[in-house]
Length: 471
Image (tube, rainbow, N blue to C red; front, side, top):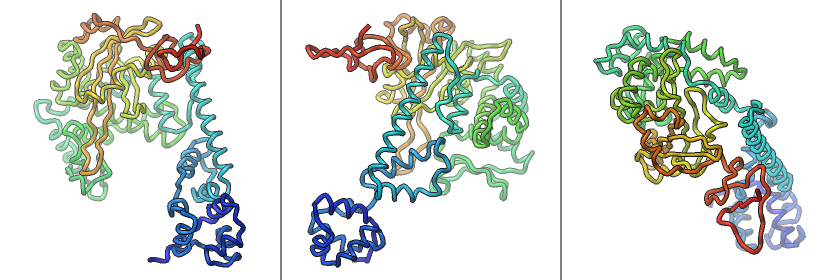
């Protein structure tokens, strides 16, 4: 047996105290001296494998109780100290292990305080949404994380950037649309910048979708991507080289403070311009009108994915050539929000999108099946939603592929120009913006009590809803 060393003195001490043993008694049972046990408990001596075996046999203690983060406390503390509010407070996470071992009650107290803090932020956000609906809201930041700060800004802005879109459309006119676009972009890169393109297998590039090696002047694209996503990655690299000044100008207009947020914004605008090259505005809008905004047909017409065509529908905001006001949201299997956008900004105050009754949360049980639904809210806002699951990059053996679901929505007042208009004749799905703001009674899927209502607690009976409330 190897002479492995473990420092877990505070845990040994807690075990001793829980058994009401003195150091002398425990030392005798472990066949070591009381002074050595004292040093172990103060983490000044290790627990060797021999002592570990003795602890296990004498006190029926699993080695796992002395090794690692058995209670998940350190993992939870890492999440707490990753909060922007506490950024820079720790030189390393080693201090968290010490806290969990030496002061477990203090550690649990910090976790409780942070949970209360996040819950308060969540309630504040929900209250702000309620005020926005009444025209009294303010723009409250929920977090200082650069990615979330950027997302919050972009959600409130129309997903159309006229200057960049015009530039991308003009740039796209240089390529032969009758030829394969991937080939045209590859030729442009070599002719203009002497950059070659190579697709690499998963085992060679397991952690990247795309990588530009400036030393060898080669762009590597992962074969795990679908042909549509490979084209998007290539187009993204092309616009970063060909439209860099225009992209930088759009970033400056956002007036971001953090450098990380600026870099993220640059990538977001590069992807926007890539879609504009793959689906030039004028041609896409003309086709969309003829096809009555059928997303599947548009995807086939422009040889793009369903997600790419749906995203492009949310960008049709050119001043003299607007399309319907589509909006979009994407979630993963755990219900985490991936992104939200819309031609006029994401309609958070009108639509919300966090109601568990929406198809986007149940779409994973019907993969790759198009779900079209008529939805009506308590305030009588009515929307048609088109939902479909998306397949992420292919995984190697043993790696679960990424699965998300996308919801494309449009207000019922504009839906008549789309192929999805007949859904308005179906019985409406009664939804709310989210459970804390929704006041629809007797909802089977309610997950939280309404923010502005008192629970109706009656021991003589139980409601069909988990959170029945008083009017």
